[in-house]
Amino acid sequence: MGIPIEYYLILSAFMFIVGVIGVLTRRNAIVVFMSIELMLNSANLTMVTFSSYLGNSIGQLFVFFVMTVAAAEAAIGLAIIIAMYRNKKTLNIDEINILKW
Amino acid sequence: MSLRLVLFIVFGAISAVSSVLMITRRDVVVSALFLVLNFAGLSGLYLTLNAQFIAVAQVIIYAGAIMVLFLFVIMLLRPENEKSFLEANPSIKVFALIIGAVIFFQLAYIIFFSSLAKLNNASVAASVKAGTIEEIGHQLYTNYILPFEAAGFLLLAATIGALVLAKKKFE
Image (cartoon, rainbow over all chains, first blue to last red; front, top):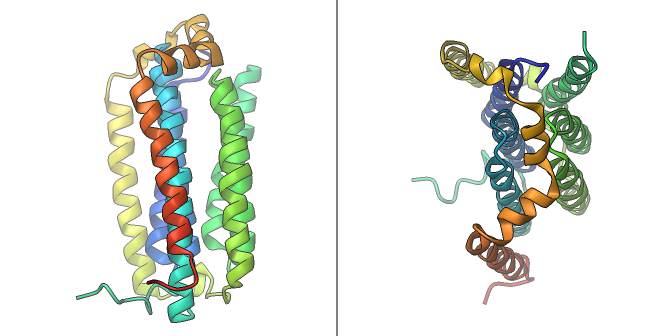
């Protein structure tokens, strides 16, 4: 396979880190949610890479299930964000601290 | 340089740059559009890995369905712009960058010091066969039928849950 497997894995690790930094620094609930999607996608890239280099389709099957869960998670999470916005009139996660001790 | 390497560099650069731009832009709509670009780049990367079905599913499910949902919610709520990454609270920024660097070097250490090199001369034919929709569909409807049904049930539960949560009033 022309390309060393490390290239894909390093790219995937880089995207995961960008997602982590996004979650830690951004204060807008929707952007935090999008950073989580980014991390899910970097994990998907790792699984497809190994699936392809091992010649085994199970990894890609698992990516398909991850996409299903991500779709369900996006629907539920955005519904929660809408419900939160209706009560608090804000999307800033510093001001949404109702579950904080 | 082979064509595969050129394609990898192009799509990898698109994915990496658009992911960085996504977390540094102030405007939420711009962030969402950069995330769509990132998904498009990832779809190209999947094609260089011979994963045709996943590449198409990535465009249809992520870029097509999930991001449209995100853009609809952004349009409905119209959130105010926050401070950009560079003007954000410096202590949080330093903390996040340190955490990110530590995790990245851990991952890089694992990647470079584990014996992955023997995978590099994997056969292309097996990889092409593993990525076809025929092979994935065969696995999905024989060995993995129970997780498939569970995924369908999960989507049903998510639909009902989203309807209940987004209703006008809680009873």
